[in-house]
Structures are given as C-alpha cells and as structure tokens.
Image (cartoon, rainbow, N blue to C red):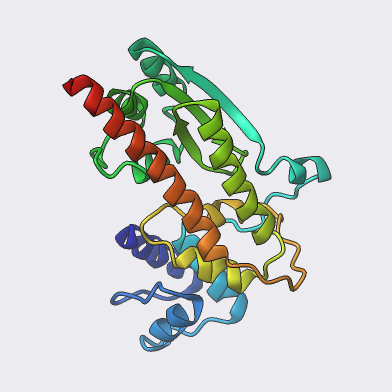
Length: 235
C-alpha cells in the first residue's frame, strides 16, 4: 500500500511542476514536507495538503458539499445485501464489481485471502472462507464490510460512526497525519475528505486509534468467523 501511495504522490506532483526523483516519507505531513524539500520540491501549505490527500487516494478533497441530511447520514448504512449461498455471493459480487473499495476493504480485513482477488470474485472468496453473512457499505463514503450477523454489523457501524464524529471536529493536518499513520489499511479518512464534512472545533480526539479500532474489529470478526468455519468444515 505504501508503494501505491508513492505512485499517486508522484502523479500528483507533476501538475504542480515537480518530479519525484526518489521515495518520500509518508509517515506524517511534516515528514512528507521535509522529504520533498530534500529533493528541492517546495510547496505552499495548500499544495502540500493537496498532494498529500492525492497520495492517500483522495485527488479532490472537499469537492462535495454536504446538506445537513447528508452530513447526518455519513455513517449510516447505505447498501446491504444478504449472502446466504454461493449463488448470492456471485450475484452480489457482480452487482458491486465496479465499486472501487469493495475488494480493498474486504481483503484488508482478511490477510489470508489473495490480495489480487478481482472485485467480482471477492465476495465469493470471503464466503468460501467464512460462510454466510451480510455485505454492507457503511455510509456513502465509508467502508465495505462483510459481517456474519446483524449484531456484528452494528458493532462495526458503531466504531465507524465514532471515527466520523471525531474526524468531523478535527483540523485538516490532524486528519492527514492520522490517515498517513495507517499504511496497512485503506484510508477511511481520505475517503471522507471527498466531502466538506469536517467542521473543526478544537476538540481533541485520537483519530489514529479510532480508525485502528475499526479495522482491528473488522479483522477480529473475520478471523473468528474464518476459524470457526474452517473448524466446522474440518470436523
């Protein structure tokens, strides 16, 4: 995932008139700035943040203005499909094959699956490893999840909602630093930044821990379901 971020950074710097000649430190906004300046790439604050978001997968930060209703629904369930049979898995996989984050999100929580699994096949691969469940999108700009039951789905929804509410009050540099700190998982904060959801208030929150808590819960659920299903199949 770090390699992908570097490639996106390289592409984002070209319109700014710069070429990335070597790697860059993507551990924080300040580290990125220092590593770029070491290559004589000097950007003003806005340009630096713009290329930073692009590196994280968000090329158009704050491009979508939210109505009050849309803001309230940021962490609400947007799509939900039952996956109770292999035929269901194939159908849902075909339906959502064009969704950019379906495969990255489901695979990030399941390191035992092949990271190259195509989007059309990823739901079937998850079902084969865990059996039946629910495929859901937590908010229009949120993560895709596969949960064994409604209670597990609600648990992930609560954790994601906590992240959204905290991030909405955070200044941009804190959101960027938190997003950079999660190289193992797709950045949920970068996805949210497509909208103008942030209304900084000065309230401090540990965005790094909140995003990590969501992904840890998603992975723990998947691990438990996978181990349980493997045990039943083996028995």
